[in-house]
Image (cartoon, rainbow, N blue to C red; front, side, top):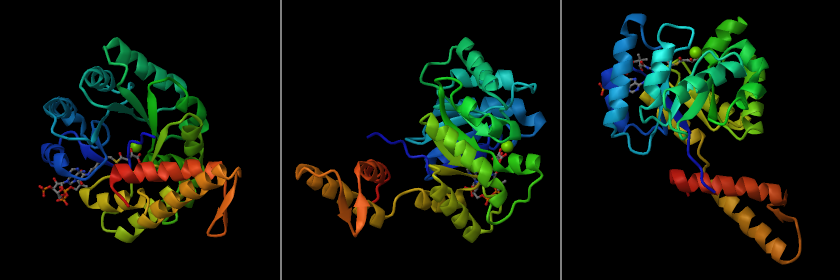
Length: 287
Ligand SMILES: CC(C)(COP(=O)(O)OP(=O)(O)OC[C@H]1O[C@@H](n2cnc3c(N)ncnc32)[C@H](O)[C@@H]1OP(=O)(O)O)[C@@H](O)C(=O)NCCC(=O)NCCSC(=O)C[C@H](O)C(=O)O
Ligand SMILES: [Mg+2]
């Protein structure tokens, strides 16, 4: 089983040359080079040129490179997509998407600009309309690989409060996870904006993991360790997963479909989960 780890996805403003450079040595699974909200209008063109140059220059190792582009309804969106199409990035992240047609429109621009088939499309899920159309968005075109929660925009549009337990987000998080899983996509949780709140970040990571997310978007390098730890299996989980795989294989060899591990029922479905745990652990070096 091949698993691409996406435990930590670090945003950095495309206009910040120091951040783009520093990212080459940070322990992030994914780097999101942002041309959208983190870049002021008068720095957009410079940020685009700088991001394309950084991707071209490389040196990011196995970190996945994702360019977040401005919306097609802005003066920069079309140019961003055209530049990203042949940039060599792994994926393009489109923002403020409201519908499946919005995704297809971006896909058409990428194709017309000569994007290779293996350039993936990631989608920000951050508007109320996107929540209501999550399933159609997730299945909009074969290029889609990942849904990324935009919980800050969503909180604003819902007129919700950014509470510690994130209860106002739970419906939206669940809808997007359902959509992602229905189409075999990765799902990455939103940002924790309080840089001084390590405890709150750890709790939000844990909640995201429990809900089923594959990782978390982050805004500062000091948040990386919390996400990398929360979205990787623990040594205990890996040990138990290996025991489940072995016990079930033994049961099957004895002509049985089920068995017990530590008094808990183990069926084929648990083995599938256990194999995923072991595969992720091997990639990220746990256990
Ligand atoms: C928040 C920041 C502006 C803080 O920056 P700074 O004051 O430079 O922080 P530090 O001095 O603590 O930085 C220490 C070193 O780390 C580097 N650094 C900082 N942030 C990053 C980063 N994101 N990526 C890579 N490197 C980073 C600094 O350069 C320092 O390096 P050194 O010189 O070697 O000491 C800043 O962290 C920042 O800009 N963060 C990203 C903000 C961002 O991208 N926001 C947009 C995405 S979130 C979003 O849009 C939400 C979503 O759409 C939604 O709706 O929910
Ligand atoms: Mg946003």
